[in-house]
Length: 255
Ligand code: PEP
Image (cartoon, rainbow, N blue to C red; front, top):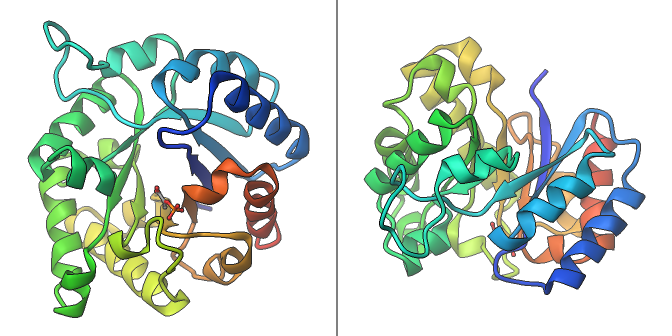
């Protein structure tokens, strides 16, 4: 069975004290959640203390929100994948639409980041998704296919097997507008069949595909009914302990 994953993307929010309190409360509230992996994607400076905190709960893991496309060297302000690995970070979000839109990340830059992460044993959570105009022009499948092809499809079968994919329609991120169950399931099925055509059915069946875009406790349960929806990448609602825990519970009821 594919891994079910609920990931919280804290983005550039929370002070140190707030972040530790949120993690402690989540760990406390979600002790027996076998079969669901909870990933907390925090700002870089909170990663190390968070890793210490989650030792007590094997269902929790920590993600960075970005890493450099370079190996090491004179790149002031950047964080290398090897540095993440050296403190025990398991995952890294790559290709988030905010990085694409605000920091000019291209598919090829993201491909290099994916390579750096995998070389260091850090598992990418690769984000893809179309703009509203692209959906309205009915080119959303082409856009997502191109993102997959240009950032992931140079990988070997063993490497792609180590990736998690997050479908995040850009028009649904932070807007309060979520994709309908049908829109999400249809795109997840498309992503899985695209991976199947490039690699194999068995590889495609093993890869967890998360939905992201205004997921809340109110819409999570319906989304998780999708055969190809293996969890969620949650932004805003991941900053509220109760909301995030309720989304985890919504997934637990489906297992
Ligand atoms: C995200 O940032 O990945 C995200 C999905 O945000 P939100 O849940 O706030 O839409």
